[in-house]
Image (cartoon, rainbow, N blue to C red; front, side, top):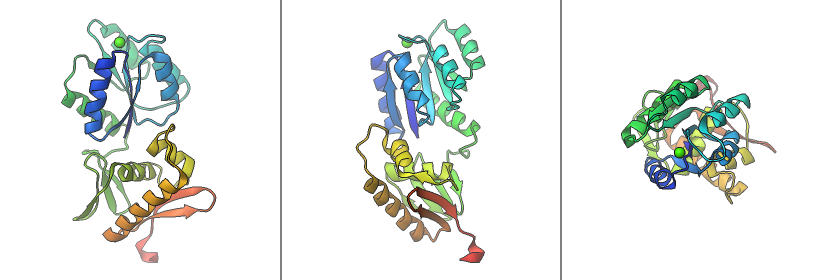
Length: 229
Ligand code: CA
């Protein structure tokens, strides 16, 4: 899961980022509203954590711009004391939840899980299902029935992206942007290598899920019908 944290208090932002990274989230930071909006408009994030009082552009305006541009990424507002009116305005402007500062780590993680769940992408424990497999993107475990494999963070992120776009062909560029980050140096062969790691694990599980190559396009995740195998 990729998270954008827009927070101008650098010390707090970096502390929160470290905690999220420990919990296997991939975190990008923006320290002002304009940079935050630029990043959020990319649409590559699974969640945006948004402070309200920010230099250059406040969080509520950022959120309004984001929703006007049709970006539906879940947003959790981080509200300081005395910002209750902003909080209400924020929820009216399309925020999914708010969290008063200071907050406990567990509370933040719980809200993030709840917001993702409400968006319908995740099952109760954050587990994704497709075909006969389950992916736990928090614990990095791929399983079918009682057989399971541990995944690396990149493998998990790649599979998560494929599952959330199941049936759609995904270009190598889109995969690199989503899984490695848009400023990364990852190349096409990185994707190939990780796809082959995942295929080996899917085969090892005896799964009906296949990652198919689409020539000159990229990859698509499908579940084969057992009757036709
Ligand atoms: Ca602030």
